[in-house]
Length: 270
Image (cartoon, rainbow, N blue to C red):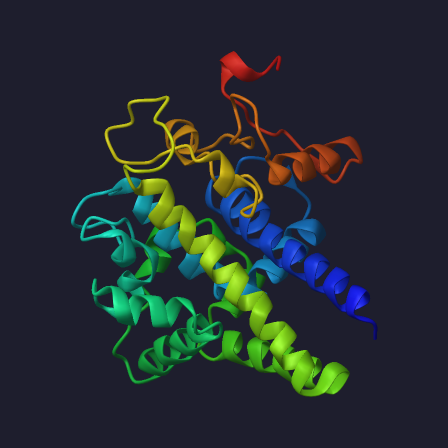
C-alpha cells in the first residue's frame, strides 16, 4: 500500500468514526436533533461505538453535562483547570503531566473502558447512567452495547484487523486514529469551555464558547456556545462556519435517509 493510499484511508476512517460520535452519539442519540430509520440509526451507533464506547454511557454522561454544565457536578468541564477538563476528569487529577501523558496515550480511553467494565462485573460501578437514557434502553442494540466487555471486544477486533491488514504499521495507523479522535472529542470539553478561546454569542449561564477553528477537526462541534443555547439543533454553526455534521444530516435528508432535522425557529429559513 502506498503512503498516499494509507493517508487517504486513515482520513476516511477517522472522519467516519468521528461522524459516528458527532452525528450519531451527539446529535441523533443524545439530543434527538433529527429522525432516521433503525438501519441508519444502527450504522451511526456502531461507528460511534468503535471510538467512544457504550452509547448509553456516553449519552448519559453528556446529558448530565448539559444539566450541570460548569459546576462542581459537571463530569468534564474545566472547573479545576484546562487539563482537568481535557483528560483529568477521566484519570482523577488536574495535574498537567498525567493529563498530557494520558492525552498522548492513544489507546488510553479504551483501557479505561476495560477498567470501567471490570468494575461493573464485580459490582463496583453500577450503571446509574441508564436512568437518564430510558429512551435508549428500549432498543436492543443500545442495551447490548452497554453489556460489560462488549466494547473491549470491539476494540480488540479493530486491533486484530489492523494487525492482519498492516502488521505493526497497521496497529500504529489505528493508534494514530484513536489519538486524533479522542483528543478532538475532549477538545470540546476543554477548549470550548475555556475563557481564553472563542466567543460567547449567547448568555447561557455557563462557560461554553464558540471556537470556529475547533469545528474544523470536530465536524462542526466547535460552535459549543450556540449548541448550549440550542441543544436540540441539528446545526451548530448557526451563524456560519464549517459544520460537516450538519452537511451530512442535510445529505441524509435529501436522500430520504433522515427526516425532521430540528433548527431554532429564527434559523429555519437560513
